[in-house]
Length: 636
Ligand SMILES: CCC(=O)SCCNC(=O)CCNC(=O)[C@H](O)C(C)(C)COP(=O)(O)OP(=O)(O)OC[C@H]1O[C@@H](n2cnc3c(N)ncnc32)[C@H](O)[C@@H]1OP(=O)(O)O
Image (cartoon, rainbow, N blue to C red):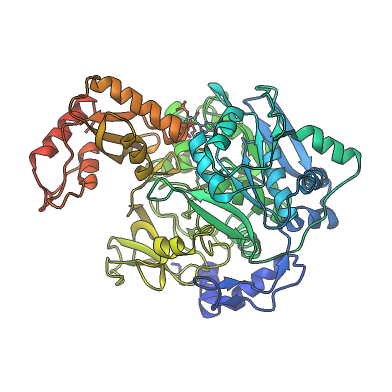
């Protein structure tokens, strides 16, 4: 079915001539000097795209639309049920805001190549800040607000920002999360100190300012505007970094995924036309967070590069005020597509299983729901399809790729939806399923999902100042291929199925988290002798972390008290986003005779699945003890 039709034709065109394909896609971008060379295989770890071109991403996201007559069209709509406010920014207004903020950044000494860390909630200023950095060639690094001070400090230390932009708080439905104390603590913890912090005071939490380091965002931007000062777009190489976005690694040290300017724009524009099918002037809602790659690509950059309107939603799928929140957003803003994580739909279904809140809204203009961030379970996908009566498109990609690897390109044609599969590889991606030795496996057989090099435009060229770690993490396991660290299979029709990870990363509510990082935190508790964290099945969040701990002998504290402290410690060190609520004290951990902890078997016991007794297990009786400990907490 994928051999014929528009998708098959386009995919084969890319296979036959990848450089020709991307050269044509690049025509949709306004370059300062257009690429003469499309790909240089001799540069970087696997080659670089558009190596001789220069451009500016902010120009493509804002200036050119104003130039071309879209100045009055809404670019960004901020819809914030948690503050009870809404605001619309036209392309002209957004250009004005971004130009003024960029001038302020220049006044603070920020120039091309300097890093700027953003610690921001879902406010329009977060998007302005990203674009202001892009405008002057600075490299932004957004840190998700649900991370604690220590995680922020690690990122500050690695990115070494000249300036940090932060708001005083984020607003969760149940509480105001004060960012400023977390920021101050992170700067104390970090060996690198920024010169300046530009602080956006929010009325929900006015923060006190550091006498020399902190500056008032609104006052400086207002002054720049009053003086009529706006920064011009600075030309950058297409291969210059636009941003660094940290993602969980297998240890506590996150990996700084680098995104370049040129390839990013080309690929995002292609996906808006061909995958999402969103046209200039139409409205797209991506209910994620600017701290994740989904937010970077499909709240900020792609809709704006396309000349569409993006809705920045500061709220939740349920509870702000109810499970009809997404229907209200779609109806009110006339959105043609909504993109969110399956967890959001599981939450809506839990609250309103009959979708009783839906008929109150006119969704006649709505064309498709896109899901990504975690595996879309067929049950949830079919439920969403039944209630919305539009195609529900699961698609699969990663922070590393910046845009979809596998999807259903409704802009080209709607392919048959097979629940459980994100559909087929997008042009640029030669996706294969291989065994441990890198040999292709037959259709329908589980294996490692890998991508033949080179990766396409938009995918990461390297990790921030860690070329060797990049090669070791992604290219070394299967020479000639990028290792996605996802496992799954490809069926006889070429549909890809992603079933889980091959490393110790878990996915909790669409958030990628390192169990290794959590183990480091648990092990730092003075009562803990050893520990193992596994992701166990969770009906709402997909997975939840579960920490098994063995206490040191002679500990007088009760296991319950230690477990409570461990839960609090993970929240304090990693942040609420880890959703770590389960710590279980056990007498010992199951291990092989060589001392390897049998995490996969522990996970199966916790998920209530059958398991084969590992041949090399040191003492099979430990598995019963694990089962009993889980039962005592109502699990397994
Ligand atoms: C394709 C490439 C990718 O995968 S990029 C990643 C894509 N992932 C996503 O877009 C994430 C999708 N998930 C979500 O949007 C949320 O989890 C949804 C579904 C809305 C549910 O949110 P919520 O009910 O808050 O649960 P949660 O598990 O996200 O939160 C756990 C605790 O963390 C907190 N939290 C959340 N966000 C923030 C924030 N920005 N600042 C501060 N705290 C935050 C939540 O309040 C929650 O705290 P608590 O434990 O309940 O006290």
